[in-house]
Length: 73
Image: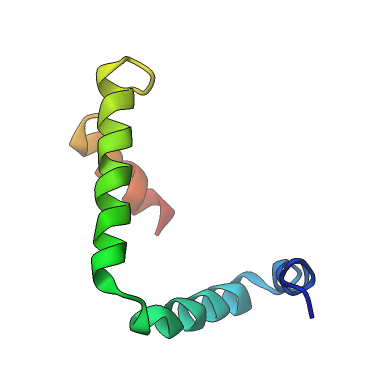
């Protein structure tokens, strides 16, 4: 089965089943080199910082971010 076909079938699952599948897939990545994960996160942080400093993205006050996060729970 091709990845695209699996992805399409997974997207047809309920929210709960998709979340369970996502957690299972993420757990299966525990064997991935954590140094590589750290490099990817550092690259992402640097990209976002550059975008912020260049004015391409805006920041929000922590209180607003937390209020939004709580409302989604």
